[in-house]
Length: 561
Image (tube, rainbow, N blue to C red; front, side, top):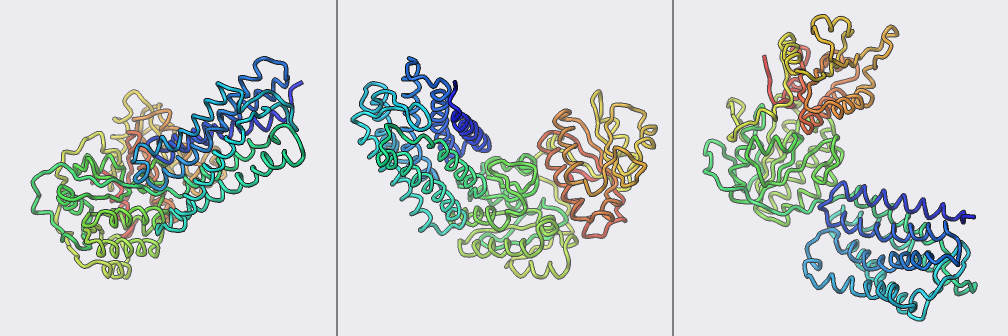
């Protein structure tokens, strides 16, 4: 009969496998993510082997010795991989750049693994413990235990030192979580798996070590995903002749007043031909690169629809984004940073959070002799707030009278979002043309049966936004952010590179508020931009105030009407 404690091993195996794959998938190139995957790999080998041993549960089975040796391979690997993991955070620079470091880390590990497979000095046979069969340890086990203890001590020391000496808040918080997540399982595990068996005279480990691997894995995964700090390598764009009509004051904090960001981005592009730069924006990065020729400049994307390494949520503004931007300027004096779409973030994150971020950004910019560029539409923000914002800048340039085009050719494939001002009929016509032989999605506050005749086509899915009792299958406006957005995701996944029409912004704004509608609109634009889907939105400009209309218009690649 199979040992019932196999369930513990199977659960630990599944959890550690999923954690390792998930964290690695989120950022395959991240040093911490890769070393975490190695650590989870060690845990998975341990848990899998332990599970098979408990499943066989027969000391006379010849396969038992293979799985015992494989189990102890995973156990032996943990110490070295854990040291590698803590050294890879917060940055891959430093001691890991010295190649012999890897030899020092892993040589003891491979020595123990060699002894496990080639001799009986570590695994000397099979013994039955409290939770099933495990290894009867050999004469070299004290050596393995000593090496393992040293490796764990080094890992804890590195984490403690990082926590105590770092001036970066993200690093301190992340190190603290890792320190707790490593120290607690190690200390408790040492008691139950090493000292307790000796005290109560049992021939094997207690056998609950796989539980500690899950605890350690969860803490480490949380620390990596929750407190991510980008270590951005400074890079300069290819040289091109400067466009003298686009200028800002180098080494100053520049506020560029304009109805769009084109002037500011062109000025920023001039600067990053000579000095490294960092771009922080709510616009899909590929659009920024194509439109302004920023091929190498790192771009931090503020979006709720993506979890990439260079993507943060608006709520991260005064934590991860702030720490990343200020560290970049401190590490690279006389650099340049552009912060785009302040108006949207004021509406979504709140003015207090945004002005705090701007003040920190400009203060660090001044201290590091960096150039900070912030475009702002003065009509899209409250007058009082505008005066407060201006107080953080020492150079204010009003270019609201200029119509600026990008200095790089715009790829038509990147024109995903189009706003139709008082031209609904033209919007419907483009929707029909965009369908081709595929499907379209129509999000509307009008009954679909009144729209279908004017379209004259059948291959359209509808999402009807209505609160009436006579509208079965409809979604209330309150479900915009979750139910409707979930359906939009499903449609795009099933029909990439197709077309979506979204109308009714005026009614929805009156019903659930401008911020809710704006957040949904931006999320859909982010999603369609990243998937190559076209979004068409008709509006009546007079239904909005100047501020709301200005913020809406900034979302779109093209405005017709």
